[in-house]
Structures are given as C-alpha cells and as structure tokens.
Length: 199
Image (tube, rainbow, N blue to C red; front, top):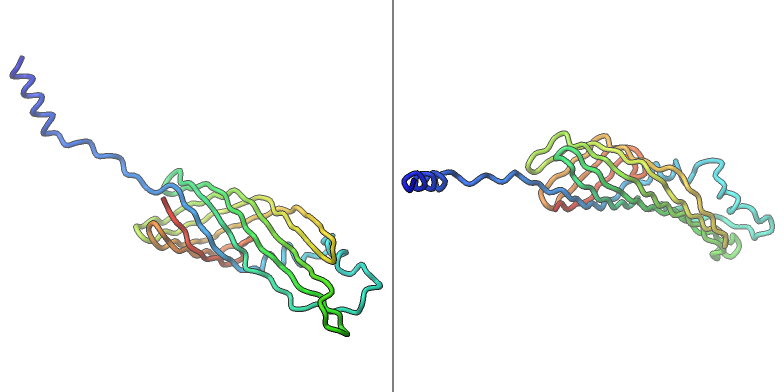
C-alpha cells in the first residue's frame, strides 16, 4: 500500500498544472466625435417642427437679422460589456448643440439668442467579425430616445423624438488604449472617431 501511495504521489507531481481558461477585456469605455450633418437634417432643420413659432411670432419686434449659425460636432460617450469576443452589449449617450444670435439691424446689437440642445440615450449592440491582436473590425446598432431643448427669446420648449445609430463598419486599433473610426448613419453622423479604453 505504501508503494502504491508513493507511485500515485509521484504521478501527481509529474502531471502539469491545469491551464487556466483564456480571458479577455470585457469592459470598454469610448468617447468620440462625429459629424453634425444628420442631426441638423433630422432634428434641427426638420419642417413642421413646433419650435419654429418661437422664432418669428413677434410682429412688433425691431428689424433683426440672424448671425452665424453654429452646430457643434456630436459628442458621444459609450460603455459596452463583451459577452463573447464577438458580441458586446452596452449603452451610449450623445450630445449636440445648435445656436445663433439675433442682431438689431440698425444698431447691430444682440437682441436675442436661439439655442437647441440635443441629448440621446440608446442601448447598443456590436458584432466583431475580425478580431486580431491589434486591429478589430465590427458593426453594430443602437436605438433609443432623444430629448431636444429649445430656447428662443425667453421661451423654452422640450421635445422627445426617436434616436438611432447604425454602424456599417468600424475599426479599432490598439490594445488597452485604442483609437477607433466608424462609418454609419444616425445621431453620430456618417463618420465618427475617438479613443477608448478596455479593461
């Protein structure tokens, strides 16, 4: 019996330790900017929007003209959790702003300010179809809700509208810290870029 125990102990010492299952970063944080083309078309310049009555409803106001119209680049912040190396779920928020000043024509003094702020909140899903050590390619989508706040001549207006983002193709370059670029359609515009962190 002692010989058998010694033999089993020797065999156990010779057997290699079990290899732990491979792991990968499951969390990802991203911040990026896009182009404002679609936000202006879909949410700011859409015809029939009820906020237009806030702009030209005063017949007795002085003769005015609008200054330069400015639209910021959409800023997005997102988080995702990888269920698999090829599948990630998460959420994204996007902010954009459009504004201009109104001037009295005779004195060129500022007599009014128009602002429109855009906030979108959307759950996201991404599919990674090429996953290399440094470079990965992915596609994805998001669907949620947008809140629009308009200020004009002392009046305020809140609106709610659907929001979406379809990413036809995206590329990530890097390991823990990485840069990304996307081509798609939605609240981030046609093109978006930024940086991210995986952990």
